[in-house]
Length: 541
Image 1: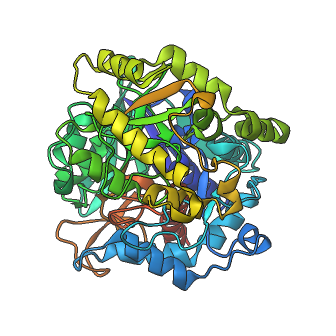
Image 2: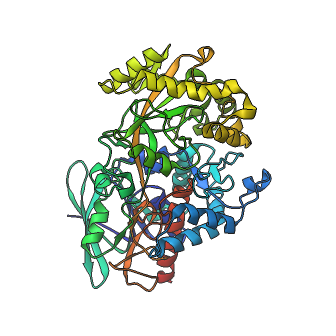
């Protein structure tokens, strides 16, 4: 059996694992990263992401006159999280992370990674406070740039010889002895050859379980009822929860497994790279959202940037748990976007002129790709034709032309009455978002749906898309894995086993509670990695 040895073994080559490796080699500690994926995919889901980072009191906020504070951010976070009274570890991690976001900012910028100057404002809140101010800092170059720069940092580091990386290696079991981990065993992905890893410390950075639809369904939150018939995979294909199960077998605790950050507007990926691969659409604010029959959803209309969990919950209350967004070409050209690096070439390539042109001319690549390769993206030159094609798409006649026409006409009639007597919550929210310059340039003003000058009409069938595990392996503030029935910081932990990033529910087994303020995933991956490595470094002294 092949043996792999190092002072610390990191399982997983996503952003959490990479951040942990950087911290350790900078302190002269030799590291092995064991990753299941191919070398060209080093960086995991973070490499495919938009690269949003949550910061409080950042230079970008101050420069643009955004008044923020740690106290306000904590209030917003806890309002959105709805932590249970029994939650202890998640709350601690949330507080400590918010208090230290600027250290994450400095850590990132020290690696020659920059940010787009305008801070985005998402998850503003619907029934409870969300982000009171803009906090979503977009990496200039997306998550692709973020991961590329971090890998370059390792490759150019004077201690790069301290890092070994084994790709296409799958850890399958964890061995214990006297409250310590004594080794790991696994197989290579392609050849099935056995290997064993021996170290003084072990860090689980293998991601969550939301790429495993069986686990997603088994842990589906009770507020969402029965899981949808079809759930698209917006997670990593190796986010299968294999190591969650292994941790539970050795007596570790899993917590908040029913808390997930899923998206309401998933569409099949035009060029899928994994089974059931989905894209997360950033839903146009000027589109109306209707159910499977063509009825506008409410009573509070679904509008992006306020409460993603509410949108998922509302859609899951329907008999058929998918939805349609109804818009036109003018709206799509201005507002349609997708979350991630793949369809945001100008940002990914740091092409400022191209980015401005995309804002002015629209993302033609995305529209053309969806129209030509996705059957769920439908165009038509009348409402009747649109309904006919929608029913052809689903293979039934559940979309009612009269219901859809009524939904569209009731919305459009608001614009005919004049802005002084608009009485539609969606229009009010559009006007609210347009007050902020970061949204004004990307959101149309006073746009009807059934506007022949803006034709063709478009219908996008959207499904629930599985994304992030908000719960996971329970850890203390050192990121050490805790034994079952852990209740507070004094609870017993495995001496040399750590869990970081999404594997640990982004800290403590669930630092977000029910909802995320967005931009918090990448940043908490780095924060939890730092807490683990601080403890390992201190033990070595």
